[in-house]
Image 1 (cartoon, helix red, strand yellow):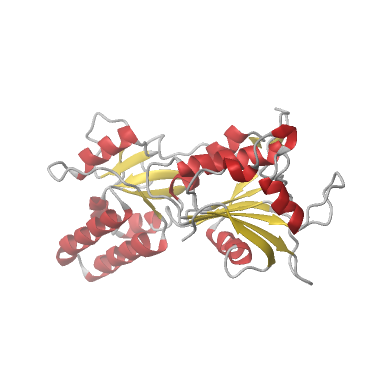
Image 2: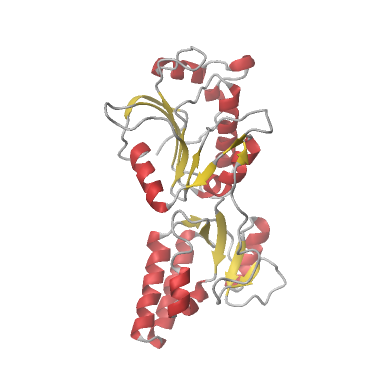
Length: 323
């Protein structure tokens, strides 16, 4: 759903012209399906972009130099840049290093000044849009309500986001169809090759009763988290990967406030809204709507659920070390 692209810092010189500037300045904004993968790391990529800006600046007219500076600010401060941990050989070119990184942990594509490589993932990006099937993205329609389908849609977020919030007001720790997909998400986060997340939070709602008549108030949520679940499976708390900075928060609606109903995965890389929920089903014909949030809606929902919150936290507990 969100696809990582490595971007050659040298492209800044070409994207600062009027027509390319208008196109490229919107391609990697928060809420878009394409995101910049910081190679070899977010910090070093931004420094390489800064070095490029200093190098080309004296040769640009005032208007073009202003556009170059705006692009640099956009890419270095406003757009999400995935923080990879790629090896980088100073004796090789940026492209050569990016290809090596791609073979270890693939990008969707490597955007370069020239294709000029045997590696198919390297595409020329001076023109806009690039003439390559790798730039065109597959459509995101309804998905099967399976754990594998959810993990596929969330892959980039789980691999790179530093703050991850899972929201399912109807989550039930006792039921395996809820617990298993979320535990697989936590396993994917824990096993990623780059830097670990700062915080992972699961937000559930205090409900007087569940659909089957069982209690789902704050006390019941806490008890179910630490008790054996449906079918005698291990407790949810015992299955959370060791050391993952995990928090569970039980929240309550405020008087005249928003309803706790929709389900989300909200991160600093992007956000997804699910129509049905974060639970899986064994019925292959059942599907779920899965919608990428644009930047404005993502900011709005993060304000509601993450900071400062529009709901009252009635209980919370840690399942790992939290920064």
